[in-house]
Image (cartoon, rainbow, N blue to C red; front, side):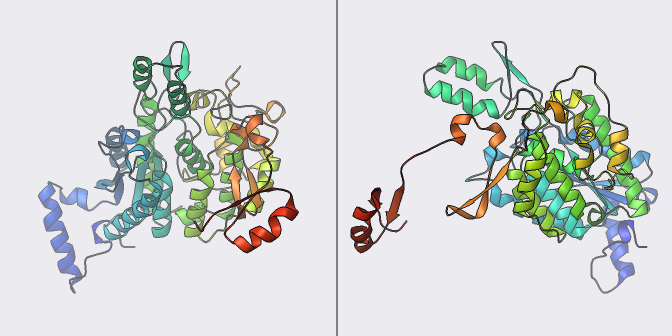
Length: 433
């Protein structure tokens, strides 16, 4: 099997010359023949001064490199684009596919036997997983991890559930300009992704549930030393995959693992964006996400994780309560525990090693669930004939019950004249648009 620098030689019409030229140039970086003869593990670098979510990426890269070298392989770091929600104009969604293309082509174009992708901000993990699955090279995902919580006047704060709430209070005159500036410095007290169950946390949990990252990778806070050790362990595992060649993303991203991801999404109070990204990931490996099936899962799976915005706590509390392995244990038969993981075993092994934390109330049992049904439901009707999602676990009763008279909009004066008097409803006319 071709490996290392001999993989994917540049087409000069002479394979020997291609390898000779490749080695001549890479030796300019100071590499020895011993280093260059080893299996290569590529490592993505998504650090950017515009992306505080990935502020710890350089530290994680160094730890992953250390793990790769300890296991006898050669780490090679390469850059890809980096996306942050608050710094993408006009919005970040269209950049997800661009990042997937960028990452995929860099993995394809450069010689590597396995790849480590490091990311976390909302669109990053799905983009990286889409890329890795398309190349189908042995891959290990390292999420950057969530921020630690902030504090203000005795209240625990978390980005970004509390961002809009406190800004709304400021606009309403309940918080003055001086105090909102103080709050602004306390909402995001460290690097890492938002520490509530938003899109970033949802995608990290999905990644771990699908076996694409090592156990506990979704919840370890970004600044913690444990996160760095996880990166080193991930580097070691990637080096092993570079030699064995398996498991590949196609062996992990199965119909069963996608169902596991949907169960976890419902149980954690996950983001509706998660299903959008999961659908894109599934399409890369020929799996179809069915909205009706997702809705049925939501009627069977209760919300078990007490995190904002559906509950009261934050990602670091989820971690200290036992993290995703503990949640999988509580979900029991709702999860396919025979699904394989990148660690080499199955989810059954992950659950067997789950920590029991006496007295914790963040991860509930089915009997003490936060909500008796899942976080999300599928809605269908004339406004959304192909379906729409609602995260009802985070909605107040007032938001879930809304009654008003019909409003019919039509651009035809004739139909307005014919139908208006008969219907007994308010009729408003407008032009197209």
